[in-house]
Image (cartoon, rainbow, N blue to C red; front, side):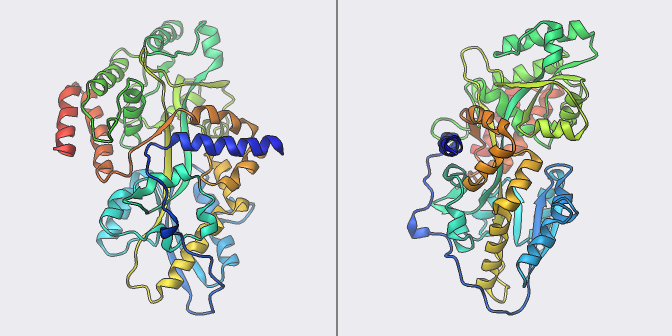
Length: 436
């Protein structure tokens, strides 16, 4: 028990280090909703809910039989009479279009699970978290995660879950070739060439995903590893910095030298993970869910993790990725208080350790609430190792209203560079578009 308590304290400290901004969580003047007494019986409330598909088990857990023979919707409705869920699971490739279409037609979901939030908040579409989140639950979230969803002192979303990225490498391949995992960009190129020579091109040394699925992560890996990034020290957009140009040129160079998967513009992180699981890829940057993913594929690949390589003299940074749950306004709702209470019930049920621990561990993610840590460590002692990775993580600047355009713009710039376009010109144009 002492070890668990110490881990709880350590995890809370680590998540504080991961916060990319200095915005404090809202003070008591903007306290979350108080726990309310059981509402009197009345009209049934139906909540429209969109959940993103994190992996092959998401659909089953929410709508099939993935919760020990039942599912989240059935279990929730049984525990919360008077509240029904119209829940659908949508792929990450489709969710942005689906949500935008719903909003344009006046049919925004009541509850949305997604990564971005700032544009919805700035357009006045979201309810403040304080309006529907019970206080006890609000206080259970890691403060550094809450801070990622603050604009002008108001919290607009709660964290769903998180992941951190590290470099996975095939231990058996590295031993067979006689190389060590790379720590610098120069060492990465040396290792890649050794793998190409040893396996005569049958194994791809290094994986790169510059797809519309998650190309912004590639931008982060290389630019943060070169002292650059999306913003400067003052939080201003710095997309065309010299460090960023050098970093993306380096990444494109890896592709041109034949050190990567053949089609970075179309092969997603999941394709790379499949290649790694099948022994066709030697190194892959992936989240902490990678072992679970490979095991579900029936793979027995012998893997280990290390820090993501950085340029000589620069510091390695892990990408901390946090998704969110938010509630949209519905001014046509006949009873706003009852609707807010129903949304609060959804959140309380979802984050109940009895449910949430199964969800997070099934998908191989990191928790967003303190109450889940003890159970997760007990279920998977390897979780403790990710504390070291988390200590170096940075987050995307998703609280900035331009983030969605920046995300899509960095991917477009990478894909243009893959076809021979100038990295400098692409990032100059993006900077001008975003910052003027």
